[in-house]
Length: 342
Image (cartoon, rainbow, N blue to C red):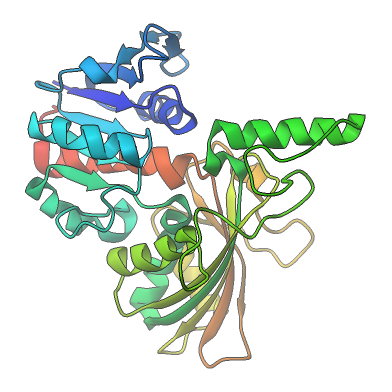
């Protein structure tokens, strides 16, 4: 016996990936529903590679009663409006937006890192998925923190345009084409030209000069991993279609060598170490696309601080940063709490 699962925002980048991953991982399904706004109602989208198709249903009129789980990926405003409705009708919500992440009654989950926190989901029947840049970071930090206790993290992100949705991907494509043919490349979606450029600005600015994306990385890492960790981030949008990268500097309370860190990370769930000190002996975003793993490369000691390490972390932001993590939460929820499937 399987589950009845609804995917909200099924026509978007992450929603489509959720459907792909449910099919790839053979999630135990009795029924799956693709939900979106009235603009997409009646459209047909693929479910996996089997040729099965789903007709998109209207979220506004959908009755979640009798459905086991709803994977939301339609933005914070949609989640704030519809997630409590679904949860109130007995359907457990796994939300990919920022709407509920810092709610003390909503667990913020990365299954490889803090699966035990899932036990608190029943308070609101809602589970939050972290920000894409946070998810891949904490997967790599967890085994190192357990071994040597992290004091401080400095991270610079190199975030792909798919993190901004379809409009971001379209703008990179159109600007790149326009530059080659000599047409106008004025930004319409991003604040500055994204093609052949980088933009040190993701989300809105806060009073202290940081952006909301940077703030998310700070507070989410504390909630998921350890509130005592100090973290500072600079989040940068780069002209890459899919795949987020992070240059990470870590300061530990206890001594840890690069070799010890490499061995720990090789054994860590969800992590793949590719770290050869030679040309091409590291992973780039292009190679991470379509993969489940969080890749760690360039592991080395930082001689400028006591007990310091540097890492390079790469992951498919549409997968581990969003859709895959949500499906992993659903799998964990089914195994540990709902226990409906045979």
